[in-house]
Image 1: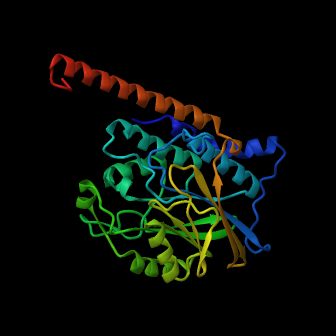
Image 2: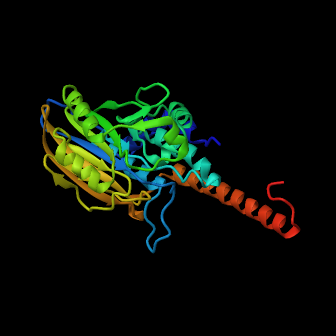
Image 3: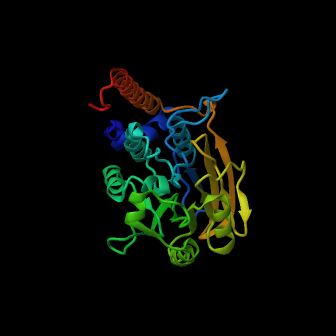
Amino acid sequence: MRSNVSAFSSSAGASLVAAALLLGLAVVPATAGSGPVTVPILSTTDAVGELKPCGCHTPKGGLARVAGLVDSTRIKYGQALLVDAGDFAPDVTRTFERPKLDYQFDVMALLGYDAVGVGDRELAYGLATLRGLAARGKLTLVSSNVIEKATGKPAFATTKIVKVNGVKVGVFGVLDPALELKPTAAGEVTVLDPLATAQEVVAKLRKEADVVVCLAHLGRVGGEDLAAQVPGIDVVILSHQPGVVAEGRRVNASVTVASGQQIQNMGTTFVTVQGKTVIDVKSYNKVLMPEVGERSDIARMTKELEDRINEAQKQAQAAATGAAATGAPQGK
């Protein structure tokens, strides 16, 4: 099922700038070489199929608030690196939630995600599905140590370099080989040692990039171990049940970011670069409370999708109940 989000993509950037001008705000990115430059990095992870705010006492999270924070950050800083570290997909066994995956890809395309990490939840849908959705939204899936068995080559882009406010930011991702993959994924890919992969990739990225960011789908302990053992990484986005740490944690020269699950928080990191040297990194989790604000278009489309999924589930349950009552085979 294809959502209608992608129809908005081409005008998203222009609309954002126009809104800023109407509000009297200047969108003037700093440039490398003109003094210290701030590179904002906004990160999401472990959405696990959640699209809207939680049912908490004070509702937190939701894609519409993610969009609100992205927009406000770009208005203030001109540009920002936007990444996801994986496990955003719904559970593949909950077939009625399959439309969420299409929608998530479309929203990431609309918001202009620079790099999207791949976790075990995404791999469960198969390489063809992931590649098709990414191509449709012109998104870059990044994983440096996932190898396609059929070709012996990396299944996704191993790195991506993005220019943010004149600063070259290199992004790579690694997946934990100890994770139990679904049969579809296990038949399609092999996962290499993340430590050896990271050492090799970082050495190459350091020749091209001023800032290096790792999407570490290794859990909190595994991600922090990687940060401790691989020099040259400035920011490590922790993924796969990373827990929540209010502020970035310094591990040697790296700062790790742990923003929890269900996109109730968003990693908000600011890297200060002087010339080609990182001179400071500050990071904290922004709790996506109501005061963050929502993108009305995404809030509306999210509600419409959730309503359709809920209605389809109700109809399926009613059909199953009726079949059981009459003794008829279900699904007939």
